[in-house]
Image 1 (cartoon, rainbow, N blue to C red):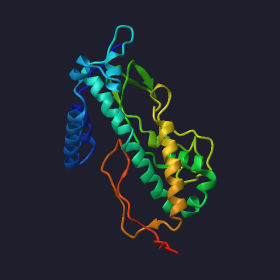
Image 2: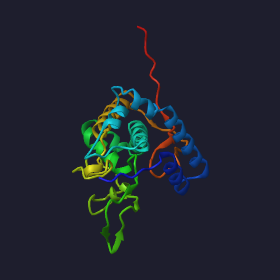
Image 3: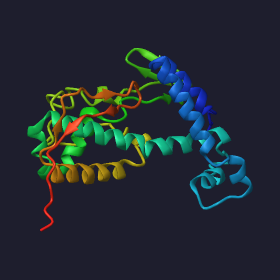
Image 4: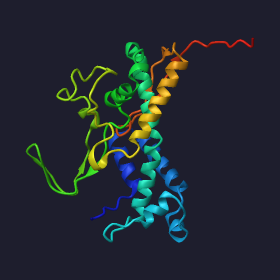
Length: 246
């Protein structure tokens, strides 16, 4: 197994500069710097291993191959954001689309499992990703060379009319679950089941406790990103119920 060393900050900044606004690119670079600064130093964990994930990755070995320092840090950053940012965006995106489609929201309690899967398909938190080809691949008359960077757009696949009838319609009763919001195969998201559980619990609680919840007149604001899809703000309104002390 051949490893490829990638400097997390350089990659994050390069992608942000290509696919985002200059201000947001700088924000990405600063966030990456802050994150890697706050993580425990790799050298410290090498000298004094603890019962944590970083120490485990430093000890991991496969056929004599070990992770480099940069790869350990990159995986820590990935797990940190994958366990927080994406689920937050799934909840925000899902709430927004259910409030835009009140008829679907009324079906939520009866089709909770299917609703979460449909929200992942309809407007998932990770529209695209970046992969490195490990071998030459023929693809529709072209060749993807080993080492080439490839950007699969899962959001496009999730609107494929050959897989999903009427793909631009939100339908919480849709079946079967054929979306690729969590990727597939060896790249399938490790936290998929946790994200699904969190979404079911939160959406059920929100619509049960706030049945009159609705979108406020102000327009929502989306984060200016391509690899993560999420809201910066979602103005909502509901009727406040005063509790009696009696």
